[in-house]
Image (cartoon, rainbow, N blue to C red):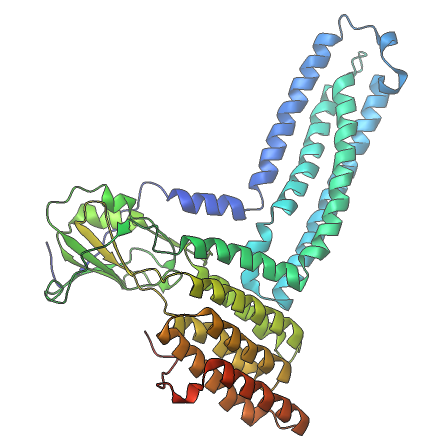
Length: 457
């Protein structure tokens, strides 16, 4: 093993991790529409073949008049559907882009990925594009010799009706999805799923034998990042597949969602670790050009904080939206306090490989969210009152002394900052009442040990 230097290779992994592919397909605007187009293209070919088979022995006079059509009628009808669908697709795409621009400017550009992932919008685009392609294929089969695909033409009419219903539902859904409550619910749902999975709880198995300082005394092998990007996914499976006769310890220098520069050290290793292990570590750690919620609920906290900060900006000045974002943050912190914090050490199934992750502390998450909002909204009584209420609710939800101290320190920071910014007498009196009530709920926080909430825990 080589010690005390970086180990860097230009070789790339054979394939991306499965989770990254799934996340990419879910967030892409083309995947589900492509499935609809493929399915309806196949349906058009199948129904045209069925009509060709029926044309030889089916008596047209036995078919209801409403369902019958000659080649000219079929061509005119299908041509109208093709033209209408192309226009409607352009309209739907334009409406969606207007919504994307509005959301980016009013809330946060980091919400675009989640909005584009909206399944409803993707299915509507798929139905409209699929109907266009279906009608085009059936139109191509209409011939001057007298053949008009009866079944395929009537199914085209049905698809046009379905497309109309889908368009109306889309026009209703787009403004509904841009409401503050819908945006916040979308972020909450994604965060709650990742909080339930609690990285790194599902990476490997729980590590019972945590290495002490004596095991980590030797100079470490420092692993350099092979490419730049945000840490999106970590999967221990490639490292578990490597047979190991001697124990090894890996200490990660990043937290999920951090940006890592190519060539910078992103892990330190003690023990047995060769070039094959290095390639396995490359496959285990997936980088991307943007952050995602997968394995990174901290990103959801930042999205909610961005919504609050954008609402408090001078150009928008919407404290009610900021309060709604604070309420959502309180919901997430309540769920965070209700579960045990994920331990930083994980092992492979043999126990020969131990990995330490950097897990954000409760204090760091408070700094990432509430304290940033306080810095911009300390002069608004509505925002300050909501922050004080959040302290009361979180104190009631926590059972750990160190977390309670952080909440006490947050309340003290709110009090110290807001007293300098709130100067109107009536607002000051209401603020004093809220602070006294919160002090009583938190059990005299000024007697607790003083802890800096910005400290790295």
